[in-house]
Image 1: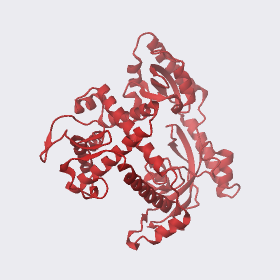
Image 2 (image 1 turned 135 degrees about the vertical axis):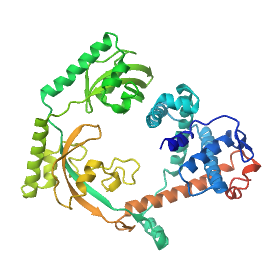
Image 3 (image 1 turned 180 degrees about the vertical axis):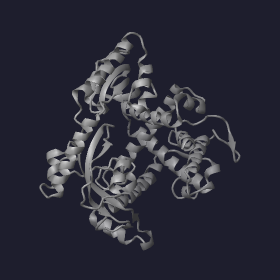
Image 4 (image 1 turned 120 degrees about the horizontal axis):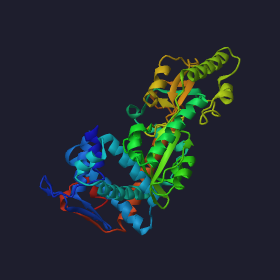
Length: 453
């Protein structure tokens, strides 16, 4: 995992060393598109990344695929300058901090990242900032090209009829789940204990202890605790309103009073403000339900499940009356797929791999229509929550069918139509930009009828 991550990160942090491979000097310029240059070293880094990800293509074929994609991206950037397309610096900063934090957490520490690339963190940030700016600009250009592309149901069905039978996509087994969820009713003494601990920590900070050191030792936000509680630069609108309001009222190095938001109770320290962005660190503590509170919550859900099983109330009505999960309460309890990598992201269908361990354990022993026993899990904020669930619908693995899987097929058809629009745009814009391609890459077949004038 670490090795693969480092290859991916090399997309952004490219070495400038003069290395040689297959007779090339890796930092030579192999193409120019408008005012945008492509270096051999960049292509070599992308090639290594693709190999690390076990690309099905290899050798010259893979290098030509990478070269074509890079030429296209540089054409996007060249045209963006003509069209004055830019991105908000605040969005770049937010993306940069999120990705950098992910890389640091996966590799192990900031020091290990700096040692690997032989650069300090500030230089790494600058390299990543530049790469993300270009990535976001190219995305804007592409989105502008395809924004008016639409597909009709007739187009989708006609497209589907042309697919060879042995190439029809296989749809994996999927499931829809409805939930009734409640949060534990924390006793006043439990909340008071958390607040007392935070007040004691605040006093230590005001008396001279380092906020970062205490965050490492005591904060229950595991991700930021390893960095001394630092969450990185973030836009005010991306943070919880209570957290953001308290943070933006602070001066650099000032420490807030106790702040409550849906994830728990915080102490916040302002590190630095840059316009609409701010970098803060925090110490998070969460009240823990005791055995009595847990027992009450479980007993309440068990009673609700009993009413549903005895037909005293329907599941959907019980959801509206009793569930405390606001995202599903008025949607008949249907759980929302929040896995961004899933093709069903934002919908109500889940592949088994998309479920949490807690849900998967319950679902495996549940028949459609049955009500589960109450169980404990966590919500998307990491807070303890108790649920009962039922399987509303499920599908077996099958080859795609326009009647059953229209939305899925529509997305594939739309993607193909988008790609056609992009290819037509490329053919048009190549005529308007200076293109120079080094002899060393002219063996790639895709160049003949498109890029070589």
